[in-house]
Each structure stands twice: as C-alpha cells, then as structure tokens.
Length: 359
Image 1 (tube, rainbow, N blue to C red):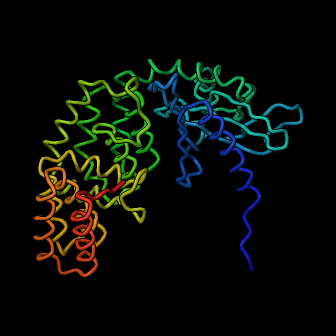
Image 2: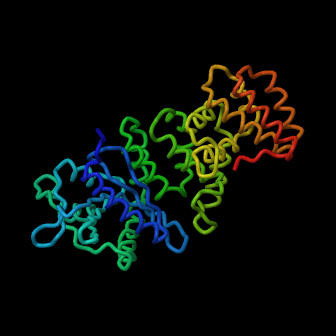
Image 3: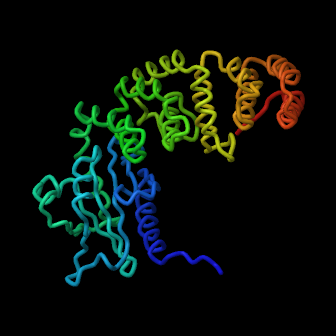
C-alpha cells in the first residue's frame, strides 16, 4: 500500500511556494523554518533594496487554503491566546500572508501592529485577525516599505538584550533561531554580537542551530557563495575586529565542533562544508590543528576526512612542497584504509596538477 500525502500538506506547500517565489523574484531573502512547531512561525524574510541588505528581518506566518476565506470574502486567521501571547512577545516583527489557491490570490496583515493597537485581544480575544492587504508583485513595494519601518525600533539596545537571551535558551530551538536572526539582521554592526557568537559556538555542538550559526559566522571571513556585495557588507571596522577575535579565540575544540556540522554533501560549493572551510581558515594554525585531528583515532571518520582535506588546503597555500611533505607524514600516521586512499589521490593530484581543487 502506498503512503498518500495529505491534501492539507500539499495546500500548505502551495502557500509557502507562492510566497517564496514572490520574495525571491523581488531579490529579497526567504528562509523557510521547518521545525514542526505548531506555535512557531513558518519563515523569515530579510529585505534587500538595490542589492543592499537592509538589516530588516520579519517573521512570517503563511496560511494556505480557501478555508481562510469567510462568507463575506474577507480572509481571517483564527487563532488562540497562546499564539497571541507568543506573537506579542516575539523579538522580530510578525506578519502573516494568506494564500487562496483557488483564486491564486494572497493577502497580508501585520500581526505585531494589530496586537499593539488592540492589546486587550491578547487576554480577552477575539482571537481573529483579518488580512485585507493585497500581496502580489505589484504591491510588494508597499509591503516592503511597511516592514522597513521596523528597522529603528528593533535595532535598539532592549531588543539586542532580548535577542541574546533568546539565543541562550538552547532547549527551545525556534527561540534560539529567532535570537540569531534578530542579532544578524538588526545588530550585525555591533562588535558584541560577533564576540558572543564566536565565543559560544562550541556550546552548540550537536544542536539543531549549529549549521545556521556557522553560516552567519562565515560572513566575517566571507566566501564566494554568500549572498553579499560591497554595498551591504558588515561595517569594515566591526568585521576586522571580529575576524581578529576569531583568529585569537578559535581553538581545536571549536574546530571539532565546526567539522561535526559537515554532512554527506561534503566540501563543495554551496554546502555547509564550504562555510566551515571559511571559518577553519581563520585559525592561527589551521594546518597543525587539522593534521592533529586527521590522525586522531578517537574522532569520527567523517571529521578526520574533512580535517585531512582542510590540512592539505592550508599546506598547499604555502607551497606544493609543504603539501607533499604533509601527505608523507600523514601516510605514516594514518592506519585507516579509506583515509589512506584519500591521501593517495591527493598526492597524485598535487604531483600531476600542482594543486588540489575543492570547488
């Protein structure tokens, strides 16, 4: 018997796909949240204006289906007190988009603004919010400009403290993620943001947030796959200060944490391995630390394999001779057959091409 996908799931995807497509066509950033949390939000949007990241991020509820259309033709979100309390205390602005797949029509409402204007609804109801504003290609500019009004308010010190607190609550993954998004969107030009994130990375080993944390941290050294340009880069003084601290602070424990995030996709363009590589290369002794991990039999095979590749990458940046000397040492120190085969093809590529390409 085949397993059939529920119609409600397909309808829900219709809404997510519609919003995602529209946001990305408008050159802004859409990040779906897939944490299976009934109380949480569905996505984040970070707005981009003429290739400049605005530093404005909102959380988004996405509802899909004709069932949200009332007999009068208005679109209504039926909710409850728990949701209202969650949205009212959120550290990001929360908006909702309702997509009607039958009419191919979408509308939006600002939940944060609604709850601020009617605070009594949080405790007393009614727990219904109507979405009446058109959400389409032709009205996107109005939607974006409305959201951009939140920049100053959410960049204040009080929000910074709330974001740090949210990130520290490690057993609540969605709240952690909200904290990280708020820090990056509204406080990325504060040195304290980066000092905190750099210092705490190893506390997130094995945590669902680790890869997202690595992606955000890799904006400091940067690499070719990051959505970034000279006009929306982090303040250069802040970036240099964070890069110096990264070089001083990152040690073997942090390297092991970052290596543990690499998945089956390995080290290739656009993978988490590429983001890890950017961070590993900031270490003061990348080659030495990676070599020590590659020969450490107490470590997982995938971690040792990644460390081996990063060690060669660092060595060949000095010279081919350094890289070949490293491979010779590793050949005598590694007793794992699979890793030794990697050493073999690395050596062959170095001798034949004078360089090992990872991307």
